Length: 217
Ligand SMILES: C[S@@+](CC[C@H](N)C(=O)[O-])C[C@H]1O[C@@H](n2cnc3c(N)ncnc32)[C@H](O)[C@@H]1O
Image 1 (cartoon, rainbow, N blue to C red):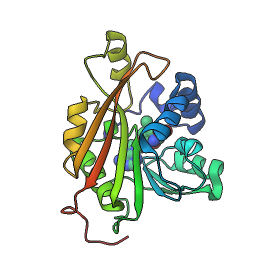
Image 2 (cartoon, rainbow, N blue to C red; image 1 turned 45 degrees about the vertical axis):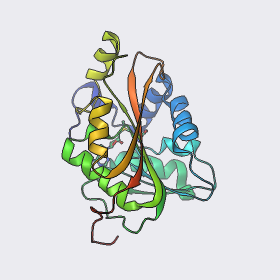
Image 3 (cartoon, helix red, strand yellow; image 1 turned 180 degrees about the vertical axis):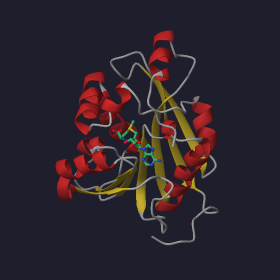
């Protein structure tokens, strides 16, 4: 995992501080948009949130949707359990050691702000994990900071200070996720936060079955 955790960034491993900063920057409003505009889980769907953090996304997920989230950080997962209790299922795991979720059990998977924390091999691993977990008509939705033609110097300054060390171009993210999905839609976003920032949403459909892990969950 490529994540900077020294100095001021260490403070962000506190769930309360991280969540407070997200709210301040407009991340909460953008998460609402992500769910309403891009994830769009059907009623009664099962949603797998990879790198769920404190499960802030769940605030925007309709009540009929069954939410399952996992994250590397024990502190974030503990905060998710405290906040949401039985509304979701939460467990601590890394993308690399997460149980193989075979069988197409989820209609949606999300990885919000996660790919830029992962090196290329780990990012492909995430995409394969999602592809194996999704139904044939399911979709993986990701969002990450990205360097695009719209990235100003101020945005670049802020992006360079992210805890994730693998910020890519939209094409860079798509090439990795495309190793596990036949159809990857790329949507560049700007002015979506209260600070200068650019990012990219991927909607990956048509999960490939050639990499489905053989070990059942
Ligand atoms: C920017 S935060 C986003 C959290 C959450 N998705 C959200 O939108 O609030 C990135 C998250 O990815 C998690 N993460 C980083 N590397 C991971 C890995 N290898 N496996 C699982 N989670 C990971 C971090 O612990 C962190 O919670």
